[in-house]
Length: 68
Image (tube, rainbow, N blue to C red):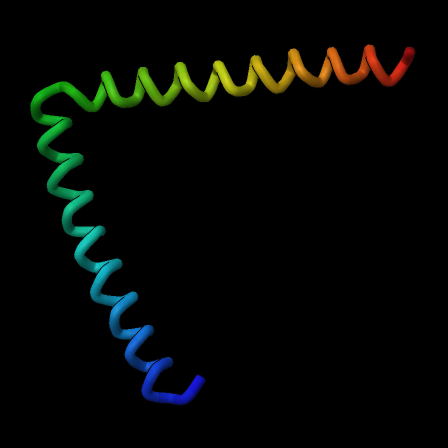
């Protein structure tokens, strides 16, 4: 890539990251003030625990099949 394209991509990435950071801060503060952040944390925790339980179960099944 030439230098113009690299500098444009860097500038675009910088602008996008600044925009997303500002949006995230306002969204987080709004959700925190409304008490909805706890719902988001609960949902994310439930999804994470479900994925971990699924992976552990699949690992046990695969181990059992490998022993046979």
